[in-house]
Every structure is written in C-alpha cells, then in structure tokens.
Amino acid sequence: MAGKEDILFERRGHVAWVTLNRPEVMNALHPPCHDRLEAIWNEIATDPDIWLAVLTGAGERAFSAGNDLKWTAQNAGRMPPFPPGGFGGLCGRFDLVKPLIARVNGLALGGGVELALACDLIIAADHARFGLPEPRVGLMAAAGGAQRLVRQLPLKQAMGLLLTGETLPAAPALELGLVNEVVALGELEAAVERWVARILECSPLSIRATKQAALDSLDRPLAESISPALYPAVRTLFTSDDAREGPLAFAEKRKPRWSGC
Image (cartoon, one colour):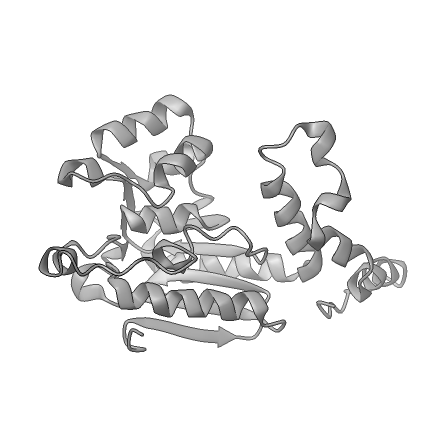
C-alpha cells in the first residue's frame, strides 16, 4: 500500500476529499497509489455517510500527469497488474453511483485526464490543460481515455487530441463541454464547494438513482432504457425515507431533511 503521504483522504461532513499528493512528480501515480486509491473508492462506495467525493491533486502545477513513467522505466518487467478498479482504482470502475467531482488544479495528462473523465463533473483552474500524450512515448490511452473522450467531446475534436497527443487549455475545454466551470486558481476551492453544496441540497438517493439511470442508459435504446427495473438505485430510491421526506417537506414549506435511506 502507498503511504498516506502519497494519497490523502479526508472527510468533510458527507463529502470525501481525495488528494493525489505526489507534487514532486506532478502527482503521477505508481502501483502502490493504485492500490491505495482502490481501497479508498471501495470505502466511499460502501460508507453510507459519504454522499459524494472530490478528487484533486496537491500543489498548483498539476492535477495528475498520469502514469509515473520514471517509475515504470526503472521497474520494467516488474509492473504489477492494476487493481479491479483499474488505473487509480477508478478508470475501470462502473459501479460507483455516488457523484464524483474532479477539481483540476493544473495539468491533467494521460492517466490524469482518464481519472478526470471518469468523474461526473470537472471544475478546472484557468491554467489547467488536458491531454493524452501517450502516442508521443509509444503508448496509448488504455485506461478508458480513448473511449471516454470520443463520448464526451465532438468526434473530430476528440480525434484531433487523440491522434496528435496535444493538450487542450481550460477555456476551449469549457467551450467544448469537457468541463463544467473554469475559474482562477484562487477561486477553485470556492467553486468546487459551491458545486458540492448544490448537490447536497438534493436527496443523496435521488442523485445516485439519477447518475445510474443516466450513465447506464447511454448504450441502450431509449424505449428500453426508461424501465426503472434496470436500475437498482432507482428501485432503492422509490422505497426510501427520502422519497417520502421530499414531498412532505414541500407540502410543509420547509427544507427537506435527507437521511440517505
């Protein structure tokens, strides 16, 4: 397991904050980090008191430069397999229905972009840049980057980035819809907190049901995709205390008191 100095995990109320804490290598990840992150995402998934999570990088230069290529070069032939959740314990994981926010505080390259693409929202500092430069070092974006980018950008724009390995600045990333908001670095924390607060105003079970129905329906025909039976989180929602509390609070003209159950 990576030491806690490599990956920081903090709880703030119902929110988990996960920080990639290797700024000396632009928060690039080596195998012990993947194992530590796998354990963290497992905890976030199963802990009923955690309603959403924020992923970020330490420092002001980088969110994450992805795979630690220096470590890879020095340990050729001794690379252990990724954990079940894939790169960062997240890129190959599709069962996490709690919302994830990427707080992109600088460069997001390679696996760093793949981690951000695996999140539901991306809030970026205005100096952030996004890129999948793997072809420039004889590799490819094999942790879902190629597949997710063509789903989250217009095809020609995505292919332009994939086939050149060039980077995309934050402002055009916003224009293309890759990120939700771009702010100055000094305003990044407040912007993320604002998004967190807006999500926490909603029922956590409603949010999970919505996320699962939205993402799991992408590859289904519309007529098939609207069946609630396809989505366990939807079934959980409609038999929950939260489903009763919401209409009651509305009728009583007060804010709802969500229990998450």
